[in-house]
Image (cartoon, rainbow, N blue to C red):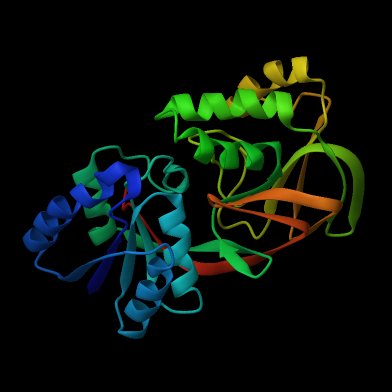
Length: 292
């Protein structure tokens, strides 16, 4: 067995880079064939993982945040290589769906000795994702958080972004097609989930499963700003499905159309689009999970 570890040295303000010492130590103990490579640009994760798959590495492990996981995923889709995750970023949401361990050496060994399972993946406007994609309020929060990080650090940046977005963001009228069902609403957000968590531990889709062949789709209508302050804490905890403005669906193909461009968040990567197309690819990737 051979393992390629792809480290984003800037993730977690350098925390991911500090993990290379522990990775090296555990791999030497295990006497396995391994290689550690660091990224230097945002697109490196994809090109390095593609190279690793072509070279025959059995396991390719992303060491960083969810953006690093997404980059590595996009390099190995369609190959036999298995995707692993060592959390070294600020959000680390996808790993919450596959590994509950907290101690970093345990997680490293989970990637060395863990078993291989098949996971669904999604494709959105031509790019693969494995966790959660969303459009609307929450995607705008991600964009505003990046701006706020220039002034605030850690959770303060996120809180500042939420407050700003609550007062500035206006819902858009969107047409949503979920398989054969069509919905037209003034919309606060739409989350298309393969995994359960995003946004640093929020639970938009508490019943999502990585291998059921379906997205869990959470749609929230536009609500008054005062109600947003009440809704958001329940959304964070996954207790929002009973709110009357919230609808939950399962689907394999989702199309979101709008007359204006919408903010989109794809596993932490953000962009704008007026038409967003999603399709589930059942059991489209091998993933590494703990033995226990």
